[in-house]
Figure 1 (cartoon, rainbow, N blue to C red):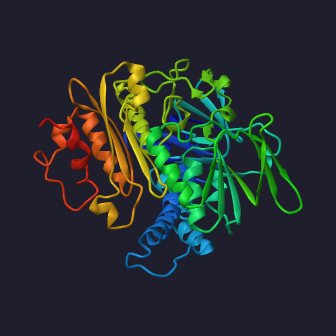
Figure 2: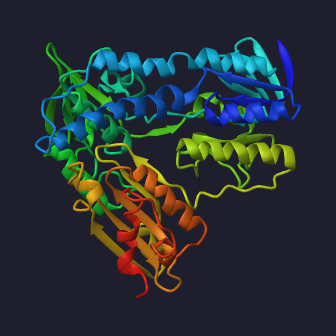
Length: 456
């Protein structure tokens, strides 16, 4: 059956959903399509279930840090019970989402969408024609192209394991592996991370990452550097994960090997060439308005955009840009210059703005100030040994260029620095003379981060 719409949205995650709802609210005829359960990565295989699991791991970690400081006894994670709790968040999502779409008059389709022309997509026996087609299809695990790849567990599946294996190898040294590794270690598994190069979490400041590596080791996580995956084999008892450089390969025994080596845009299965949609190795090539450079009827939001940092808040921001441009004639452009990010390990790390490496590449004169906060009351009172910071400020204007943090609540504190960078604040604007931060709090510790940098 052929049907015509103003907007056809591919993907039901946060970006696709927002676009569909806002366009429908503006009076447009809207269809939305997904080949998986309605809800998208964040709600079903990302942020929401991850935070539930990470919250439990944080409780265990906090209790361990406080042993000998007035806290006695062991606390443990009941994995099946934790997963059952997690599913109270995820299980209702697909039905609720679809009911909301239908209640708003948005037509819902299930199945794989493929381009059947510049303004048409086929979904099973249906062909949907749209004045605009929006791709918000998310991402999937990056193909590793090694023998035994099919024996690995995807990061999506990790969220719904009925039982947690005794030994787990995580392949890849990015945020997915580190977050899952800290969760699994807190739940009692023996955990190994295999990072293909000599540097883990490359998007973050290396000095902050080094402190996280120390904390990870103390949590029982074995992080192996320069260990590119070679193969995964199965024998009668377990998996044998082989990794390393030629002549220096090692074999790691495991009950489970988890793919945490990055995700790529899920656009290839859409047959973009049939829609005259240009792609590169990272996704769909778009202009500053998030419109396909080769097909003006196609917009992109979220992970399918090669320039996206692949974070949920960025996908939502993309969605609002796409809606405004569809309704208002391409008036808005995408800006990813200030995007705070966090890794929910124990302790977490967070970053926004320039790293030292990036500042040097751009030729920006800067002053760096780094320090330890483990002795501060806020951290010492909860037994947290791994807390610190690095701030970068412009040498001339004294504006904040970057902030890199490790310790409790840094996923919240980093947003203060994001606002400061976005609005051109200087370090002098963050002192106690400027703002009497609530005390005691992790935000109050900003005063101690900026104090060495303020004008005396």
